[in-house]
Length: 159
Length: 159
DNA sequence: CTCAGTGCAAAGGATTTGCATGCCG
DNA sequence: CGGCATGCAAATCCTTTGCACTGAG
Image (cartoon, rainbow over all chains, first blue to last red; front, side, top):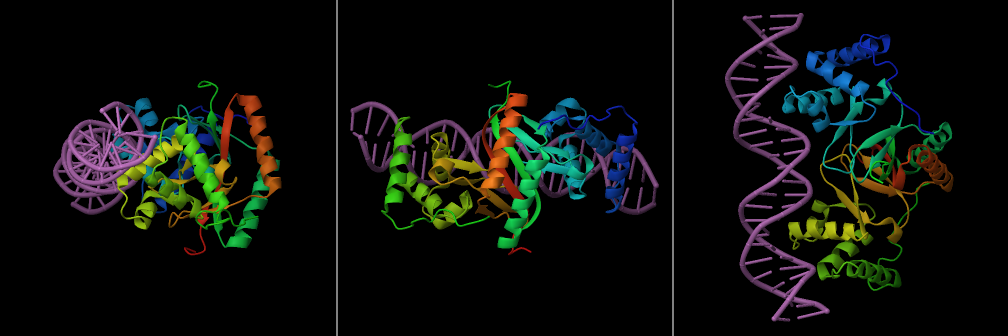
């Protein structure tokens, strides 16, 4: 049952956004890192996007940013648990906000153009998956940190 | 509900293996490619493995193979639908036989050592996922070719 | 003042490709 | 014989890193 995610309130300065900033600043501060302008920009970009962004996506949207800084800061944000790296099928890694800063969701990955869209699964599906995970953990000793349920196919635009 | 996959019969020359060879040869032949010794070696390696293999895995197991030939032939086998590329979280792509040559399954990906293990989900989980997919297709116009349900976590060895 | 952060340029590293040779059909 | 397949080496291209400079506290 897909439904829109994020974009709850894209107004700058909204309660949701400033809370996000506070959380990001806290997590960075915990390891002696600052919440700089560039990092704020990255967080805001990811928060406003309706899908994970690749580095080219980010650079084209903010051409003044240095490529290496984007890579470096996304890595830092990933380490402190603000950003999550999403691996798809094309050559570019993509990034989105960590799940505890947005909401649990899944991806539709277009094998033709590489674009990634978000969707949320029905509670019933999530319950099934959760059960499967605990079964697997019990039987194999594998400790699951999180799961990914992605659909790979062809998006409407490429069809 | 994890259970062993493949390895149904690892005896060379068994019915299952020769059938696999016939299928591979057919799919290659359909686009004017041959089922060469090297390709047969790759198919056999993947068939015997209990998990997707990276190129380094393959090269260390068959040190005489040229790296570029392995890359090139895995790409060819992927194009004709004999092999599937599995994207994980580390730097190496991994490869396994296409699902219609083995059976539908999922992956346990260790975020520490990068190793990938196979597991199969219960029919109930698969039914839920199948339903979710049709819901998404109906609502978004996305045509799903296949799905991936992977668990990312820490394997017993790394725990 | 100090030290993390930034930008530029160069290095890394998995994967791809050009080219000459080998081999199956 | 002709064209696909192979191996070696060089090229690609995303990503990471070295280094000197800038800026916030």
